[in-house]
Each structure stands twice: as C-alpha cells, then as structure tokens.
Amino acid sequence: MAGPLPTLQFVARPGILDLSWGHPAGDALPVTAWLEATERTLTIDGSRALAYGYAAGPAALREWLAARIGAAEPRPCDPAGVFVTAGASHALEILAAELMRRDDVVIVDAPTYHLALRILADAGVSLVHAPTDSVGLEPAATAALVAELRAAGRTVEFLYLVPTFANPTGASLPDDRRAALVEVARHLGLTIIEDDTYREFAYDGPAPPSLWGLADEGTVIRIGSFAKAVAPGLRLGWLNASNDIVDRLGRRGYLDSGGGVNHLVAMTMAHFGESGAFDRHLAVVRRRYADQRDALVGALPPSLPVAAPAGGWFLWVALPTEVSATPLLAEAERHGVSFVAGSRFYIDGRGEDHIRLSFSMLRADELTEAARRLAAALSATIRAAP
Ligand SMILES: Cc1ncc(COP(=O)(O)O)c(C=O)c1O
Image 1 (tube, protein in one colour):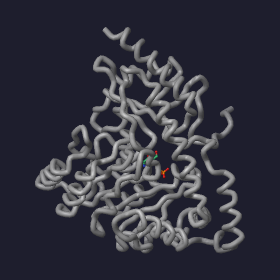
Image 2 (tube, rainbow, N blue to C red):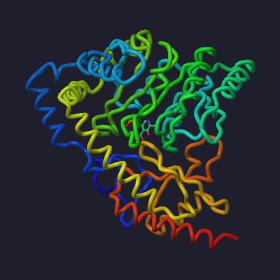
Image 3 (cartoon, helix red, strand yellow):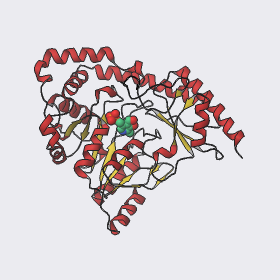
Image 4 (cartoon, rainbow, N blue to C red):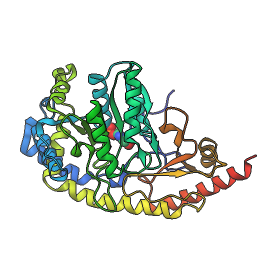
C-alpha cells in the first residue's frame, strides 16, 4: 500500500541540512497576523469575501498595491494596470499562454531562475540565453542578438530576467544597465518580463528601482509575489502591465468561468497590507534573513569565497577550478548537506563551476554547521580528484 498522501511540497530529508530550497522558514510565517487579517476580512467584507471575485482581482488589493508601488517607484501605478495572480509562477504561465506562440524565441538571462525556464518551456517557446558578463546581462549585446535572430526570421518579443536580488545569484543589475536595457527594449519593441519576487528582501539599503518603474507604459511587465514576503501557501501575486494586457488576461475563459483567482486570500491580503501588518512582518523577516545571510557567508571556508548579496535568499558560489558541482553535490549529500548545482540555471550545460546556496530555511547555527559539512565535502572531492 502507498504511504500517506503528502500535504507539503518540501519534506525534510533526515540527516540533511538543505540549502537547496528557496522557501521561507516555517517559523517565519505570520500565522497569528494572518488569522487576524482573515477575521477582519470576514467581519468587514462578509459574503463579498466568499463570493466569486472580479477577474483581475478585487479592487481593494489592486488599489492598495498601486498606491504602494506608486510611492516606491519613479512613476505612478494605475490600479487598472494591476492584475492579481496565483503567485509569480501563475503570472508567468498566463503571460506565456496569452502572449507567446510555440517556437517564438524568448530571451532569458544567464543564469536565471530554473523553474521559470520550465514554465516557459511548457509554452513550447525556444529559449535563448542573453549575453552576459561578470556584472550581468549586457544590453547592447542583447540588442545585437535580438536583431540577429529576427534577421534569421525568428519572432523575438520577450526577455525574462530577475534583475533585483536574483535567483540564483543574489545580484542586482546595476543602474546604468537598467536604463540601457529599458532603452534597448523600447527601441526594439521587445517586452521585458521582470520577475521581482525578491524586492522586499533588501538588507543593506533600498532596493534599486524596478525596470518597470524606469520604463514607458508597455515596455516592461513586472511580476510580483507574496509567496516569499508573506507566505507561499497564499498562492498570491500580481503583475503590472499595460491596461490593454490586463484586459486581455482578464478575458481568458477560466476567469470568465471561475472569477478572479484566490479571491478570499486577495481580499485578506488587502487588509493585511492596509492595517500595517505587512510592513510589520517585513521588518521582522528582513532582519532575520539578513542575519541568516551573514551566518552562512561568514561560515563558508576560504576556498568558497563569496560576497554577501545586498538582498534576496541566495549565495552564488564559484567552485575551485578542479571541482564540478554535480560530483560535489553527491559528496555533499554523503556529508549531510545539499544545494543546487549551478547548471540547473542554464539551458546549455554551463554552470557546473557554481553552486547555489539558499539561506532562507535554516537557523544561523544550522547554516554554520551546513557550511562546515560543505567544506568537508569539498575537501573530500578535491582529495578524490585524479
Ligand atoms: C525568481 C522567482 N520567481 C518566482 C518564484 C515563484 O513564486 P510563486 O511562489 O509566487 O509562484 C520563485 C520562487 O522560488 C522565484 O525564485
């Protein structure tokens, strides 16, 4: 007989300190504050919170988000250009379904969020990596690549990247490249899909302005998520797009049939935001994740040097030249620690020279022990090298 049916996506493996998952720590999830917001929602909104919701999401959440985004970014945000989704993954899935055609080329950063590559691949598009250097995506070389692909008859309309506190690198695209990239996209009629999932986790100062904030209407579609900043179980996020794209997304059959996604959760998030509970929660978890970052960075051995990223949940660690990520992973698991091999974040086999370590799920003392185990695994791998 099969075992009990699972409830959660992540299941801890006995004996393994797992640095591979970018999930929030269980005890950092705002159970009590969310209960209060839910009670408030049902008390104030009553049956309206339990009815089918409006296709693009309830007004209260779209308006609260628009006001918050407008206050933080260099340009105002129209609530009619906010579309509520079941998380960032769903946002990408519906953008691909509505706007992309099989065999179109989608340009993707290198490296980039591996599971976004899967969502895009599901749409049948061809993925091509953007040219990059040590600082990140190169706008001028990307423009040349797009021109070359178009001259060869390919349709190239979208570029996907995580420019702020990226998964997997933790890095943010510098300001001059942000401006240049937005200009290249405007000039080429290329739409940037900006995955801004980690924006709220800025530890050493404010996050850079979003590409969406720097661009004209229509050049950037920005994806946001409450999965990391509040809780993944909400399955709630949004996108900022032109009113035209929001209208198109809102006319899809599943919404006509079923109404806006996660309506009660979206209504509750509006109360969670308006009451100040969101900002209070962020202040607590930001400090916590910054401490976890410092614990892991500080505990890594000199053979795995890494600069602390200014935000996000990941360290992108270069390996000594004689070591590759996949054999190191096997050795690391024998030593009781796990991570993701860098090659998962490319579509072309690159990346065996890096590993991604996530510091979000473990306490500082566990991170220190995980770094010790990783150092031992690295030494064993180097000793075994021919
Ligand atoms: C860059 C990035 N985008 C999207 C997601 C998924 O977000 P959501 O849970 O809102 O679908 C993740 C989660 O790891 C992520 O790292």
